[in-house]
Image (cartoon, rainbow, N blue to C red):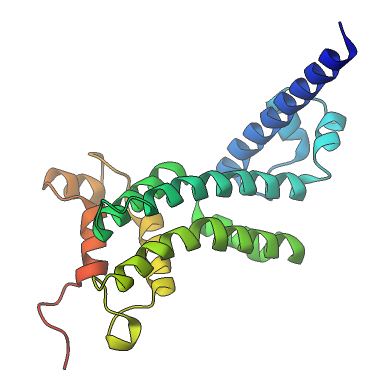
Length: 215
């Protein structure tokens, strides 16, 4: 085999191994949380030896950060695509955002923020906070900013909600709603009665629940 082709094959195999490690780590971190997962568990789940895992990632925290980075970058692409749908109105785009987040971001947010605060080094906390701000908050916030710019939403100095705060309210609602579709508990009641919780949350956030504003 020519030397150039051999190097290309080696790079391809190395990237496949790296992606296998990341996929196994993502599944384990989502299921068990950062503290309960070991690099040996990730190596076993991905079918590699620990030395090969350490060839790609310095330690468990570096692996965890890369898992979060890849998820965040994929999220950014999807959210920016939704935000760019100028042919759709603000509530429609926000409903798409909520459905995407609930479908794709399955990690327990409470667990994620606990790990961010208590399990990780300051440098990793800073890196993850920046990923969250640029990849998740910024694209969603741009939709609320569009709403203010075109006059659909009131600015905060006229009784509205600042786009950043509105974004965090939406994210909090998305992470705490029951699962989509018929099932058990509150979700079953909503869907049996023909209510879409995503639409109702967006309507409440955009239009409010009161028939008139307080004096």
